[in-house]
Image 1 (cartoon, helix red, strand yellow):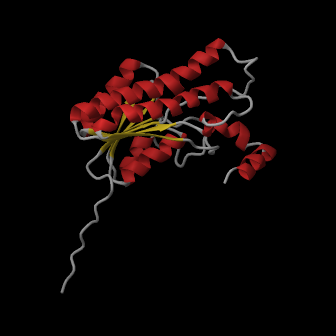
Image 2 (cartoon, one colour; image 1 turned 60 degrees about the vertical axis):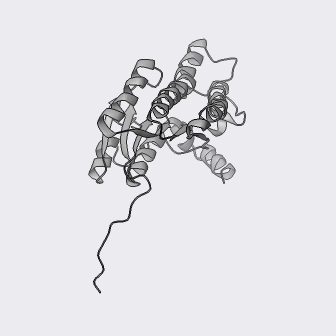
Length: 230
């Protein structure tokens, strides 16, 4: 009896995903992984190019083009995560180009510098919270509104940080912004449960990206990080 080769269905076949901060670092790992599982992905960031100084594979190739090279379906959308209109437009464009939004990964974030609270400025506070807290809130709201209207549920994943769970030295602003994300997710998950929309946070530790190159490049600091990381 001759067996036919039938391609196996992937977990995310037929679903549309939106990823913020998709051009570099964690976002550049997340978006292609979703695509590998079958999702059509809208990659959102300030620019399609990867941030200089990172550890990304083929950094000269924008994430959405990397996905296409690997046989996936992807588009790029310029998006400032802290801009309300830009975030709403990104959600609209994901649906217009790729289909009903089922997955939203809110990954965009910034870290200004290592500094004690006595040395941080109000401007650094406002810039950090604009992206790390406001950006997550705007993205969660825009995705939730769309998913509620669609009526088919959905998944919203917010990238927080270990810094949102514990206090770390010289990171009061970053810790405050990520702590806000953690509790926002708790509340949003309760609000949206009746609509079958799951809202979760992931809290990474230290990952080798351009954002923490200052730590990775110093052997003593890197050794300390690796020693404390399971």
